[in-house]
Each structure stands twice: as structure tokens, then as C-alpha cells.
Image: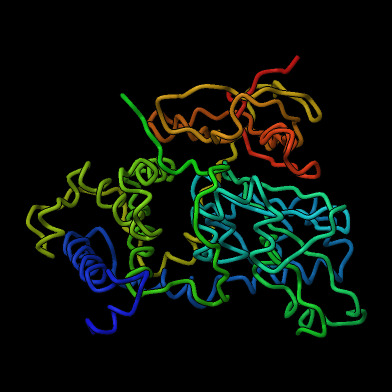
Length: 206
Length: 220
């Protein structure tokens, strides 16, 4: 094990961290503060139940159903809850729509606020100092790191999630998807496209 | 008191690559999953609120050296030690050495789905009229405040435009200090990129923050 860890540049402390968390979990359980079965349920929820496929379903619905799109733009919390997604770190949702003239990007420069019910837990880069520090100042440069280049004429809005409002980007629907089902469309909606660091996949790329 | 946050990073050009990551990998080590679960479960005991928890993380002296879940763990240990719930010698020993402190409640497995689906809404009924209206020009507060706050440094002392009223929300500054909810009107305020970053900035960039009413003054 020790040899494996030495190859892990970012996580050379994996062993000690595992021991420390295990120790903490033992103490908290012995003290009766936590229920081990609840810990398992929490982990399982964010590993298998709550993730970006939820958000993809919201976006696909908005693409095919104009009334739902209107509702989502007017009251995202209620529209998203109607599909069964609500609660922790998504109590107050706002949906923002990308258009040919405006692209939206989401960040939390102060910590790592993120819309958990629709996107799950944030990726490492979203929580990292480089992303949090740079995206409010040089979003086009950050987009380039994701391989995304927008026309110069496209305005950019960066939403800094500084309170308890959480933002979901509705990416543009790719061309050539007329007549596609909601399920097919949801496959084109990536996590990054709902943060604004990516675009929805094209039918050719899917 | 001399309150220092190490987490206010916006506009600071922190070095390092932004490394894209595939979906479906919420944890990169087993201990990260357990750090998340322990933090959520201890939050569920009602021993502190989310703003106290954020404040504990953001003031860690070695914040910049720690990974995300290391920050969570260090803050969790700090919050519990402050309340004598778990002391450092117990973490080192890996077993209970001191009697437990009473907690308000314990999150049980059967309650997890409902607790997560409910969350903790921060909107509160309006008890006062909003001071600002959509489209109004406002100037943000300037200068250091000696407590947890949610106005990023890059957006201090800047003139922006009110875009949206979110109703009254629990005021994070007060809540983090254990002073109760003290709800205030919450606004989305946007700024031109050039207002924030100077004449050389992208002319087609706007940045918005969500700002509580006391962060704002009318701009002339």
C-alpha cells in the first residue's frame, strides 16, 4: 500500500487521512452522535442517487416543453421540485439560460456553493483556488482551459453564489436534435454545460 | 477580535491549472466520502448552523494548504473541540476518552432521504419593505469587517445595478456569529467587468453577487 501511495502525487496523505477519518468515526459513533447506518445512507445518496443526471433531466424537459421552460425561468425551485429534486444546497434555485448572445457561468469565490440536488457534489476544479480566483476576472481564459471558445460578440455573465441562492445554467440546445426524445436529449447535457464551463454535446459527439 | 478569512479568492489569479474531471466520481478516496458523511451527520445534530460551519473552514490558518475535504475535517474537529464534544486526544487515540455531551438530535438512516430533500431554506417572511428596486444603482460597502461576511473583496466599494430581489433571507454575517437569523432583503447585483477589473477588462463581461441589504448604499 505504501508503495502505491508514493505514486499518488496529490494524495500522498491518503493513508494518514484514512486512519484519521476512521478514528473520528469511531469516536463519534461511541459517543452516540452519529448513526453508522446514516453515514452509509448519506454516502450512497451522493454516490448513486443525487448527481448531474438530475439536472440533465431538468434541462431536457426545458428544451422540449416551452411551458416548463417558462416556469423554470420564473420559479426554478418549484419547477425543479416538480421533477422530484429539492432540498439541501438547492433550497433557492435560479435557472439562467444561455443564448447565442449571452453565456452564463457559475462560481462560488468564497467557498464552493453548488446546486447539489441537480448536480450532486462539485468536481474538484470547481472547489479549487485557480477556478474560484480566475473565472470572475478572465472567464474566456478559463473557458479555453475547458476547450471552449465563444464568439467575441457573446456577452458573459458570471454568477458568484455568495448567499443561499444556487444557479443552474440551461445550455443551448444543440442543432440537429429536432424530434429527439427527452431521454435522448438528456444524454447531451453534461455537468459542465450546466455550470457554464462546457456546452451541451452535439449529436455528432454523442 | 481580528477576523481573517483565507477563502476570499475572487480575482486573485491563483496559480495552477484548472483540471477538467469526468462525471460520476464525487469522491477521490474512501475517506473523502466519510468526511462528507460525518460533516453532514454532525451538522444534523443541530450543534451549529451552516454559516458557523463555513466560518470555521474559511478561518483555518492553513486553509490554502489543505484539500477540500481536509478543510471540512479540520473545521469539524475545531467545532467539536470548541463544544467539548470530541477532544484532540480522542481523535489521536481513536476512541472515546471523555463522556459524551448531549446533542439536540441524531440523524438516523431512515431520516436521511427526508432530511436531504427538505434542506434548510433561508428565505423568511418579509417584515420590512425592500430599500432598493430592480434597476437601481447601488454602491457596495467598503472596508474590512471583523466577522464572517459574504461580500467578496473584489466587489467591495463598487457601483452595480440591482437585478433581482430574492425576498428576506437569514443574514449570514449574524448567523455565523451565533447572533440569530436577523433576516434582511437579499439582492442580485451585477457589475461591469471594467468596474471590477479596470479599463483593460473584457467589455462584454458582467459579474453578479448576491448581496444582503446592509452591504449596499444608494449610488448617486
